[in-house]
Image (tube, rainbow, N blue to C red; front, side):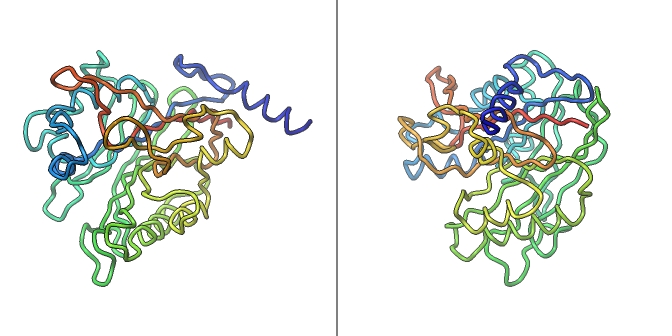
Length: 322
């Protein structure tokens, strides 16, 4: 009976798709994470036949990515695999401007730092947030290695493991609540099979739990390239942060059948979904009340419908009460 009452109380907290409201010192925000698939990765996938059409090049899919971001309308979102092309450092298709155009406003502000030793943007992470809801107090970047302050390869470290984590400290404007938000992308474990995924997880936790105060609520989002049962996932969930999906399932909160059954990326043919769930939203002191994986297709440059990326965005509603 107690469990039933808890579930009913939690369900009552699940917000509608309307803009979350704030009352009595409590606020709810819609949070997302989206791996947008960097432009050179798209080119490789098309060459290898993993993407079946040139419509999935960035130049053709950019408007679809922007429509996806605009349609899910998160209050704050982390992006992974951002590259020079997407930030118009190479070419002129600026994803930020496309998102603003699709939304019809400029409420989103973006946080991104060049993440390579030559000050370029490559497989980077970014944070987008609504200026109408949050004030940015601080922000920064660190790398998930033994040298977190510099984007350099550490001798003896797994190959490809110089991966960034972007963070920001925000104030929620209606309540004054201060919280941290992290967006990151761990190296794929199978890329070199030398422990890079676990290495990134270990060093993310070392910096994030060591340098940022526990008293503040916080959210971690990203493509962790690992799921339940893996060592890297055990490391990421071994400290203060707990996964939203796991929390809601454990509480018995009903999620959609597709969300329970399938994972966070589509098959190459775009006719189904894989079961691996490697994209995550984790929280500390926030209560998750809703979680979903968004699988909508959007028109690309020639008008045909495609998944905008090789990942689906994930969204959650998070509630904080003083």
